[in-house]
Length: 65
Image 1 (cartoon, rainbow, N blue to C red):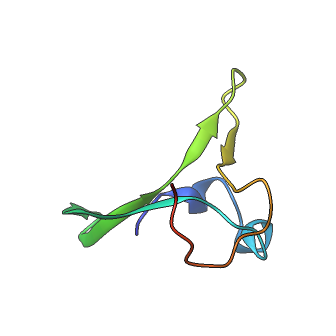
Image 2 (image 1 turned 45 degrees about the vertical axis):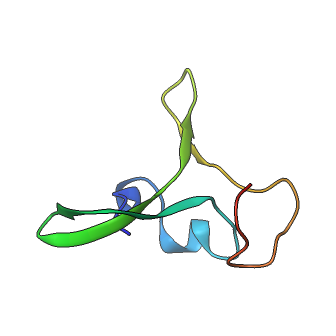
């Protein structure tokens, strides 16, 4: 998954956090690398991006329903 998130967050800011990912999308070349999914973010009125995350800690790899 390629997201471009590195421009906004450092690895340390995302460490030990959970997010919502959409997987198994048709492959799409981005920056010369194939991406098959996306990481979901919410953009506030101020333009600040916030990762979409579960309300409570979920087991890693849990399915979104």
